[in-house]
Amino acid sequence: MKLLFKSDPNMAVETALIVTHPQEQQLRQQLETVITSHQKTITALNPANNRNIQVPLRAILIVASEERQCKLRLNSGELYLYPKRLKYAEADFINDGFIRINNQTIVNLKAVKQFAPTTNARIEISLSDGSTYFISRHYIKNFRRALS
Image (cartoon, rainbow, N blue to C red):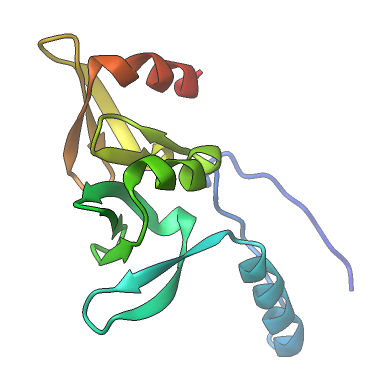
């Protein structure tokens, strides 16, 4: 087998295109298994049936405080529960491209599409699903540092 690597500036940063011959189904399945096993996941609770589910971190838009646990909202709009308080859950997400923006919310930096200053020294951010959130004054410094 011969491997060819090409770069395409028009492709999204987190995207990789893998092309295989139709007769190489076994190779394709092996590649899919290896790639998906290297994606970091967390165990969340599905509130509809109280079952645990593995959620890839890249699929999470926000982690929001919900009483004594967290609510995870995914790109697809699905909601799951994470059985930790936000201050403890922050350690699980911070090193993987997430940032805390206020006392109730942690966002995925890859999902931030635009941001603009607002009143009271806050910043309003828009996410890829169209939702908006405010970064409080206390967390602006961390947000700017994460962007640079």
